[in-house]
Amino acid sequence: MFAVPGDDRRLANKAEVLVFPDAFAPPARPVAVSVDLLARRRLFALDHGGRRLVIVTTASGANRAYDAGDVRFERIERDGGLRDDQGRRWLPGEDALASDDGLPARPRIAAHRAFWFAWHAQHPDTELVR
Image: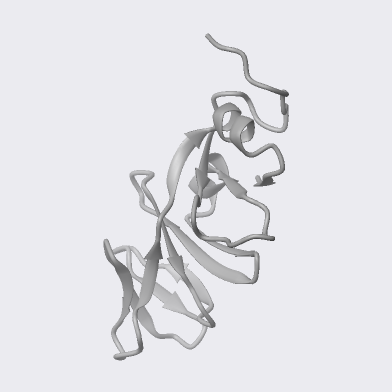
């Protein structure tokens, strides 16, 4: 429908990516994560720009990203809760991941989906995780 500068064939133009507009301060490059990857790996750790995120994808396909800090998450349980590498249970919420053990909550990070062609047009130097 309209022209965009450059063309990046790493993904189809209308493939969806999860992006984090404010999560990584310069000089970190922008980053986009393929939604197809997140559908296959419902718990996904992303280390980028000196920050560790954990992305949780629900059974219905919704994505939420949280600042993982030094916590390493290992699996999603049937009820949607998470377990970390110490066996502690965490519950994903709208604002944060909350621990059953009273540990500090891990805050949610602003993220949204975009079409690959549109994101790449605005951020041609983006790193793509697929």
